[in-house]
Length: 275
Image (cartoon, rainbow, N blue to C red):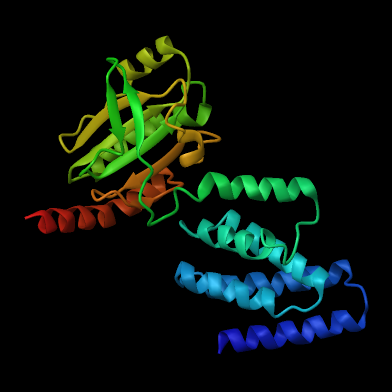
């Protein structure tokens, strides 16, 4: 019913714009309002459903300018998705409608920016197998990230990042209070200063028997973590289930707290499956 109403209104709206020959700015505002209200109504649906609905909406618009505008609006909405994991919808829209030439971005820079976003996020979407990184430990050895068979929280940070400094003060307390099952925290330093990294390791502690803290870095970027995990800025936080799938991305401290009960259930199911 919801889709039929949306498509009916969209058809009437587009018909009016076509009779006007050239869509005015006000027409675009009205179209955006209609589309965004509909996206809000389906916010709790699955990613696959949202992808299908976006395809249906874009495909229902025959006027090329309106189709372009609607496709760009939907892409931008899901690029900065309010629901974790919905970035996959933006990548789907890009691949199906823009990469194929069915429509285009208004400017070259906008198109390149969209392509970069997709390239930096398509390898670390929710539910995907987490890319495996070979990182260096502070003692000179190597380690695998995420840690196989463990619920792993990967925290990419830089000692020169102001937001990272704030998060480094808050994160240990949250983990100490909220984690009641085994979690491995991998603090992945993205900087280049061995001295600053050493000072950070000395100060950053998590006093919980349930949290195993591991430090690593990759100063030569040999693991390609920048692209595989989209680390164009810090902090970046991911949670990976014991079997290796991504169950949390773009995590803030608040969203991490809400995810922990789900992660605990997944951890318990993984242990049962191993018995």
